[in-house]
Amino acid sequence: MLVRELYEDSFHFEESTLAHYIYHLLAEQKISLGDDISKLDAVQADNQKVAELIRKNVLGIQKVRVYSLKMNKKEFYFIFASSPQEAIQFFTETFQQSPLNCHEYPLEFEFERGKEVVTFREMRKDFESFPAIAGRYGKGEKGINLQLK
Image (cartoon, rainbow, N blue to C red; front, side, top):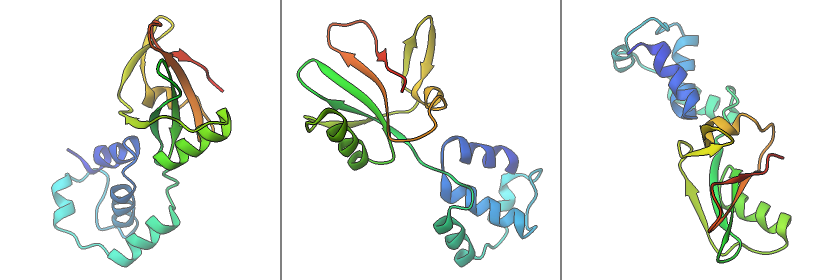
């Protein structure tokens, strides 16, 4: 695998530490995008500089997850947020009640949207700001009722 592929994957999977580490090594010209990833083991990074890049989030990586929050016995809402606490707070402010529970779902979870099959990761691209309601699911209903907002 090439550094370029790993770097792209680090953005795709929102691996901020890895992305900033590679960014630092590229900026210091200790590696190139065309190198094999085995070269990452052979070079030394300045850990203080990498930590500062991560703290400043110079690459703008915002880790967003999807959470299922239970409103009642039959109704769940999927919310994009950066943490369970943020999802619960958003739910409470939006619906004026606390959720019965909150569980993280994998971003690769597939479901039908119209006639296509999509993942939450793909769907997240439709949103400009977070937290946001991704959709609603009612037990006994077919599929997830997407409510893009």
